[in-house]
Amino acid sequence: MNIVIVGAGLGGLGAALALKSAAPLHNVLVLESAPQLAEIGAGLQLTPNATRLLLRWGLGDRLEKVAASPEILTILPYKGDKVLGRRNGFGKEMVCKYGSPFWDMHRADLQLAMFERAQELGVRFRFGATVTEYDFEGSKVSLSNGDEVSGDLIIAADGLWSRARTQFLRNNDSPLPTGDLAYRIVLHTNIIEDEVLREFVSKPRVHLWVGPDCHAIYYPLRNNTMINIVLLVPDDLPENVAKAPGDIGQMRELFRDWDPLLQRLLALVPQVQKWRLMNNTEMDSWCNETGTIAFLGDACHPMLPYMAQGANSAVEDAAVLGTLIAKARDKSDLPALLRIYQHLRKPRSWEMVKGSLRQRDVNHLRDGLEQQQRDKILLEQLDTPLPGYPFYW
Ligand SMILES: Cc1cc2nc3c(=O)[nH]c(=O)nc-3n(C[C@H](O)[C@H](O)[C@H](O)COP(=O)(O)OP(=O)(O)OC[C@H]3O[C@@H](n4cnc5c(N)ncnc54)[C@H](O)[C@@H]3O)c2cc1C
Image 1: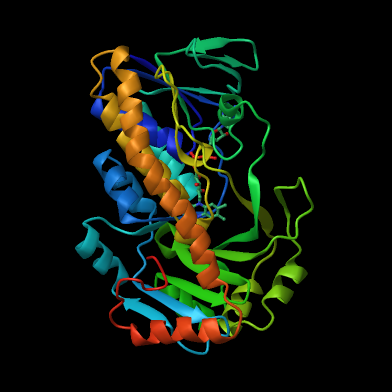
Image 2: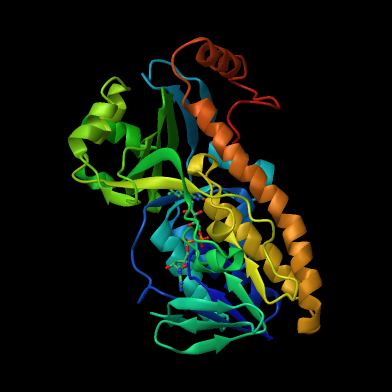
C-alpha cells in the first residue's frame, strides 16, 4: 500500500518507523511543511512506554549517545526547604520496573535520530511540502505548490494546529488556551561557575518544584552537558499570540520567593521564550468510515505537558497504528483496522489529557489546607508511594 503521513514531528516520524518496521513492503511518504529538520524546541522527558518502542525500531545506538539518564528524582515545595518526594537510583528503578529506560533528551536530537533511521528503512520525505487541502474520500491531499499526492491511507500527524482536523470536523475552531504558559530554557553546563550550582548539575537529576499557581522542572540533556528548565505559570500572553520572547526580569520576579537554588539557575538565563499551552476538545472519531484517514498525536489529543506524555503518547499511537496496518491484506481491511486503532488508543490518550489537567491542580496548590494535605501524603509515602500517590510518575 501507499501511505502518506502529513507531518515529520515525533508522531509522524514514529508512524513512519512503526509502519516500515512492521511492514517493509509498504511505500511510506512523509510530507513536511518545514524546509528542513531544524534545531527547534527544547528538552523532552521520554518515559519507558515510548523508549521501549524507540529501541524496538532500532534507535538504541543513536539515542544512547545523546540521552541523559537521571539518577535522582526529587519533588520539593517551592521554597525548597524540604524534600516531599525522592527516588534515589531513579534510572535503575525505571529499567527494573518497566524494562526500558527513562531518558531526557533534546527534541532536535530525537527528531534527527528518528529521521535518519526512517530513511534507512526506506521512508521517503518531502520537505517544504505544505498540505493545504484534504480530499478524505478521494484519499489525496493538495500542496501549496499545486501538486496533488494520493495514497491508500493518509495519516494526519500535523500537530496542535492541524489543518486536517479543521477540515475533518468542518469547523474553524482553534486550539483552546489552558490558562498556562511555559518559559522554556536550555543552558550549557559549561557556563556555570557558581560552585553550588556546579555541584547540583554534576548529578543527572529531575528536580520538580511545586508552588502556588506555578511549578518548575529541571532535567539534564545530552549526557548532562546541557540542562533544561521549564517554568509553568499563568498565561499572560495577548490573545492570538501563541509564542513570544519572554521578559527575563518578569520571569525572575515570578519566582522571587522560590528556592534560592532555582533563582541562581534563573540568574544564568540570557533570553527566554514564552509558549502558550493549549489543548482541544475531544474528537468523536479519529478516522473516517472508508478508512482513508487516521489522526495521531497532538492533531487529535494535545495535552498539558504535566505528565510529560504528549510526545510519548504520540509514539504509542504510532506503534499501534503501524502494527495494525501491517496486518492489512489490502486496503479493504483498513476501515476495520482503523476502528480497532481508535478503540485501543482514544480512551487511553483522553485519560492522559484529563490526567495532565488534574496534575496541574496538584502541582499548583496555593498555601493552605489542601496543600498541607498533599504534602502530608507525600511525606508519609516518601519511601514507598502507594496507589493514588499525588504525582503520576
Ligand atoms: C513546554 C512543553 C514541554 C513538553 N514536554 C514534553 C515531554 O517532556 N514529554 C512529552 O512526551 N511531550 C512533551 N510535550 C508535548 C510534545 O511536544 C508534543 O505532544 C509532541 O511534540 C506532539 O508531536 P506531534 O508529532 O503530534 O506534533 P508536532 O510535533 O507539532 O509535529 C507536527 C508536524 O507537522 C508539520 N505540519 C503541520 N501542518 C502541516 C501541513 N499543513 N503540511 C505539512 N506539514 C505540516 C509541522 O511542521 C510539524 O513538523 C511538551 C510540550 C510543551 C509545549
